[in-house]
Image (cartoon, rainbow, N blue to C red):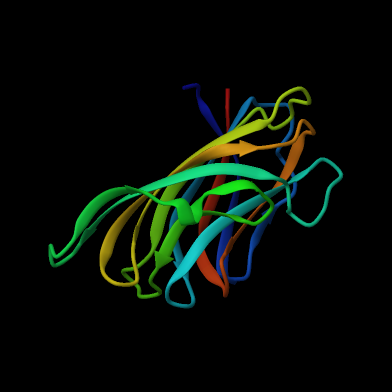
Amino acid sequence: MGIPTLISTSTASNSSSIDITSGIDSTYDEYMFVFTDINPAEDSREFTFQVNADGGSGFNETITSTSFRAYHKEDDAAAALAYDTSKDQAQGTAYQSISQSLGNGSDECCAGILHLFNPSNTTYVKHFYSRFNGLHDDDYCMGDFIGGYINTTSAIDEISFKMSSGNFDGCIQMYGIS
């Protein structure tokens, strides 16, 4: 891994979304988004992302993804590592879930990292993966692992983050990796 260079910091305060519409360009081959204390305003929400191709609008690019998760309940009543088909997309255009079933209590936030590779390349699709840890709305420690690709050979120059519904708080930092 190369050296991360901070490009921007966005702070959500009861925000419906954070849209990063500048700074994703051909300067770096990899972009890393770091999420700190992402907390939904409403219980049982998913944290999601979607992108726009250069000149596009609507945050609705085609995504193919896969998901698995590890979890452990606070009272030790349940624990597992499992493939999660409900968070996959097969050429879907929905916002991609990257952390799920978050509680809205002060101790129920998530943190994680999303990597986006070669977004300015106009020959190949754009690969991504994310790793999140959060506290589920039913007192589970939940680790989410998502990977996939954005099925466009157009350059990606915008990214949006939001909850499946409702507002959220938190910090999102975007880094370029050289």
